[in-house]
Image (cartoon, rainbow, N blue to C red; front, side, top):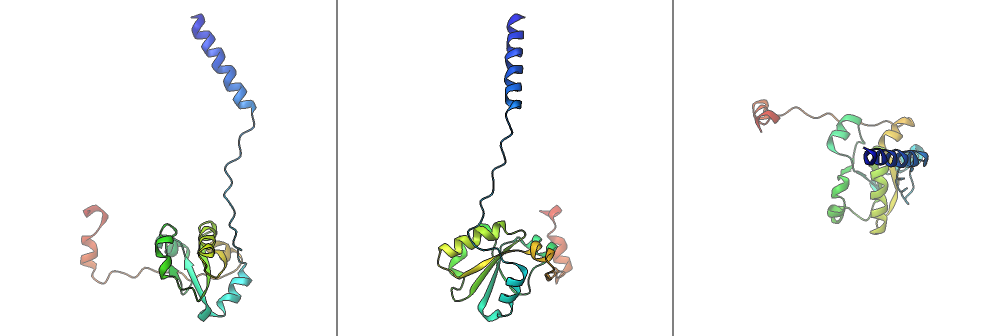
Length: 155
């Protein structure tokens, strides 16, 4: 019995010692080295579409739910390094994600690989600043019978 009380007392004292210590701050996400574009800066780049390449790093469901830009190259962030050979080097690049975290990492990677990156952009941030996103609607299947045959329940 005494041994059990001693263990409980030690555990209680250890717990109070830990609770007295300040909580460690959550790991801060490293800030991108590339410039985060404002709405005005991005719209100025949009005025020269022949010189611009928008690389959207979001998943298809994010594009359809949130919206995007009329013309962009869609490469998910996990696939960017493997697809780098397909990206033209003669265009100014803007990388896009929802709130600029993924686009920041992508912009830094592309800059390190010698691409001309104007900056990064968060699509939702752009919209909050008054920018207009293009809502993307998924077209209905051409053959409804074939689409019904490939439902999640039938897999």
